Amino acid sequence: MSVCRVPKTLEWVGGLDGYVSMIDQTKLPTELVYLECRDQESIWHAIKRLSVRGAPAIGVAAAMGVVLGVRDFVGNDRSAFLAKLDEVCEYLATSRPTAVNLFWALSRMKNFAQALESDCVNTIKVSLLSEAKAIRDQDAAMCRQIGEHGQSLIGEGHGVLTHCNAGSLATAEFGTALAPMYVAHEMGRKFKVFADETRPLLQGARLTVWELAQANIDATLLCDGAAGALMQSGQVNLVITGADRVAANGDAANKIGTFGVAVLAKYHEIPFYIAAPSSTFDFDMPNGAGIPIEQRDADEIRKGFGTLTAPPDIPCYSPAFDVTPAGLIRGIITEKGLIEPVTTEYIAQVLS
Ligand code: MRU
Image 1: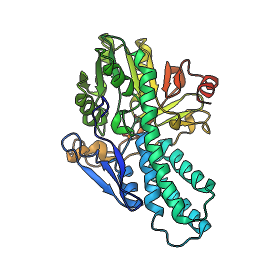
Image 2: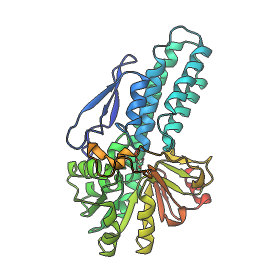
Image 3: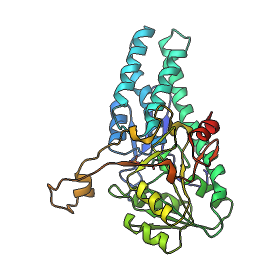
Image 4: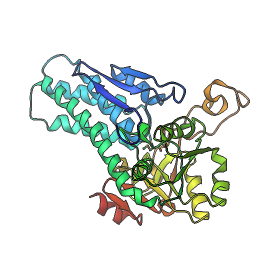
């Protein structure tokens, strides 16, 4: 097991008649339980209710969901099979709107099937399963590379702030924002991680500090509202967060509150980095203005985790993500290297 010591987020178990086993992240940190998804609907619901979440992990789940959706197709009519595949992809694409890895993975699965020469539907099904597993394995490898490219940013004795969970649980393994921390830790460097709790669904509290603790990385949890005071106290040397979608110019959508953290970092002259694999870049989006932002149910704010903490009918503003303009981002750590400065031209150069 890698240094992050977190059990695998999700994997395919068995052959074509197998299933997807995933950690049910809604149950963490109190229970480590696994879901068995055996059809496309269970994958759709797992993504929707955040049992599996984090842009790269959503992409992997969707790719495996495609296999679950087409494997019971009866007959050997290639065009009818490809039509069914389109239908399954369209359905899975409605699960969540912001993380581009979802759409990236679905397109990859569709393009892969269309490019196959075989007329044997069963061969196509088996090949699709291999492709879904390849997406998982490649994601894990890209995350490890992100860690290698980003580790030198974390110096001995540094304080690193992160927001939401962009760790192993948000990817196939290892994470994006947390990957440089895992690699720096593996290299014996001593540093401290500060994790925003990340209202309203507490991914920082429930997931990030949980997984850092598994690796014995020194982690401290704070309320989102304490990030400014923490920076003012001089304990933060850099910020690293993940992203759900990075536009061609580097504007980056990530968990709600990330933009505020980036503004605070700018004010305190603290470098703010995004860590993301190439599958999180959307080159059809010239800038962040067009990134679709998911709106969440008001009760996640009023009645989080079942306890009423506000008047039951009070209207709420609950975007799940915000967009940090490229101008606030010092660099983007990718599997292909560090993109610094963040410009349209340099992004295209590094990722081409
Ligand atoms: O709503 P979530 O938990 O799916 O939001 C996740 C994030 O915002 C992550 O930071 C992002 O997906 C990057 S994960 C490597």
